[in-house]
Length: 153
Image (cartoon, rainbow, N blue to C red):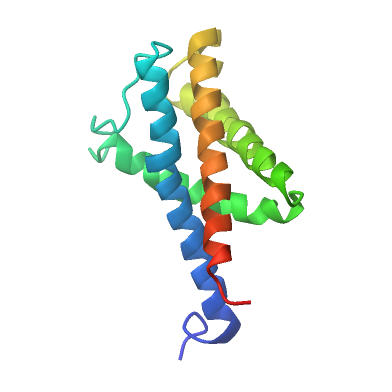
């Protein structure tokens, strides 16, 4: 039997799966929900659940976002042990979404795509990206805490 199917290794694998799924679901529920609200109030022209094909594979953007949301949730799982407990946990989760994913988006992804860093310093775009990614981080925290409440002690 492999270590992923038995004992501590199996628990670790389940933990990674929970993290990845929480990240993907947070994109669909929290990040796209925030984007839908921001679009509805006129803050952004960005539409939730975009199906525009990505390059070079042609995968719809929303599924790419979900994949990367899962990857970022694995990073979240590495740092959340340093978060305080109680209500401040959720603030830290929100801030994680702003600091990690937004900084990588602004200073690595955008330049690789030939786009200006930091959303071209456009305050509206910057605010939108901060809010939706903060909501993503908050969503990961909420979903992980909800999963933990259902686990046996």
